Length: 310
Image 1 (cartoon, helix red, strand yellow):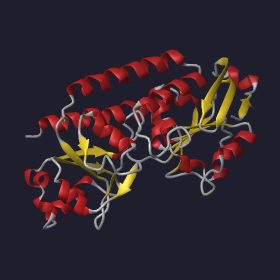
Image 2 (image 1 turned 90 degrees about the vertical axis):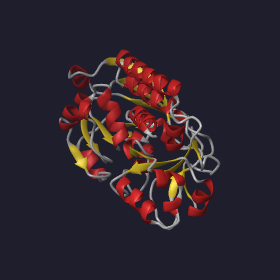
Image 3 (image 1 turned 30 degrees about the vertical axis):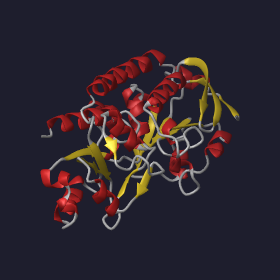
């Protein structure tokens, strides 16, 4: 593993960074921070929300790439952070902010079409962190994800910024909420189809991604649990043959839940599915299907809706 030592000027430490040194294992190798970053930039909503949940907005100089609205409890903190771009900002825009740390939710942030390789930033003395669940080296596509990556992110970011106690508090609260829903298992005994997007062929949860984890958390049995990949395109014939008990609609700007429900209800074949006939649809926002701070909201949201079904 490549080791990177990142030193911050004494002046920055005096401005609020904790005088500490910590070494963490990341997707891009071992990194050592001589002091907590004070000029962080987040890329993707899930990364931004980890920082906000830990109260680190004061250590941020920019954010980018939101999927939907920031939850109310973090809205005020989010408003205090400059938005650098609607999607990924140009490398030059990020450099202009003189960052000392980049935190991304998806690996696409560090490809050549966007900000460039993480190693290039390391050479400039700028630390990087990729959300644990998005690191293919740590989580191969064929291995089902669990909720552990959420807690790994909280712990590592807490270590980097020297707020271990706050990180432990946040993690404990989330674990308790997961336990409460898992014990109830409102989806136990029900089969489900998650409809993400598509019409000619639906895009859905594969065996091993966060959407599949979401359904398992509430006890649902996904009809595509044996389909390889985190996400997968399948046939409508497969859905019709399975005739699931419930339809989970992924609600996103690019494919809304209302659009997908209308499509299924108006299709002469899909409209005959038991779940469609009975109106057994449940909806979850895209940001609640990602293994980030809103994932536990997604589990609770799905649980409540399943409990309300006839």
